[in-house]
Image 1 (spheres, rainbow, N blue to C red):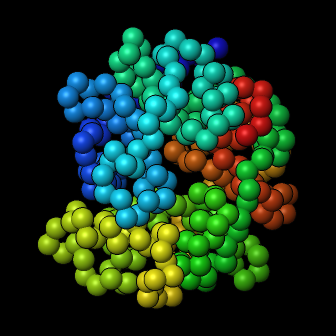
Image 2: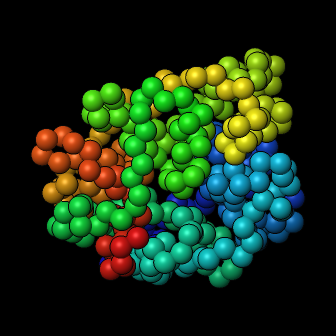
Image 3: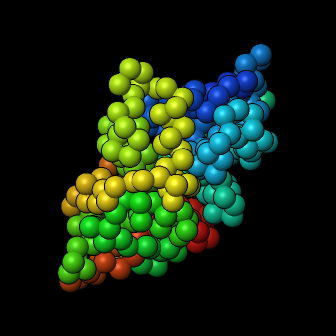
Length: 284
């Protein structure tokens, strides 16, 4: 079986403590990341982990030391990928720092394990490993409704349906996060022309975090989901093999795929965590 060292991202981008939310956000958006190892500014030793969700959960906190997760689970580069899969499937971690002799050498996520699933040639159909919740949303729903739905249902992506119940798109928290910060479509419409002078001002970034968990306090206009969603998403058939689904996710850098039946009806959403669960023998 493959080892963690074969699939990890070596020499990962890190954020240093002391630090701020602003620094984390800049790195996440610039490099399209959802989590970062936190190291001490003094000696570079691993001290924690910060994820996008951690910032969403504490929209008023600015200090990195107060936002990060301390003493996160870690793994070694020589450990088998099934051990990483076991940790992902039995806990809440989705980012595992890779440590060798007390030195941070990499980071691994469920997406990184897709290659091992693909090479393992797992032939069971995806419908047998789907475990994650599927929460569809209507394409003309206001974006604010989608944001609240993501929060309450604790999902990171939603299939988007038209008035006939047909799958027409997919909306992920990353789409909203990136579009809001980079293109400023939502933030501009609700809070005025921020970011004109300085794209990375704390005020504008702070407002984006407020958008997620204090949406009721914002006068957010009826921006429809279809303006932000990814149109005509890639899907998999319910009988598609797990290995093939892993290949599709890996090649396209997808974290999830809608699952359809023979009549193209939406059946479920399969996530990378569902896929990699086959490595540990446990469904997510």
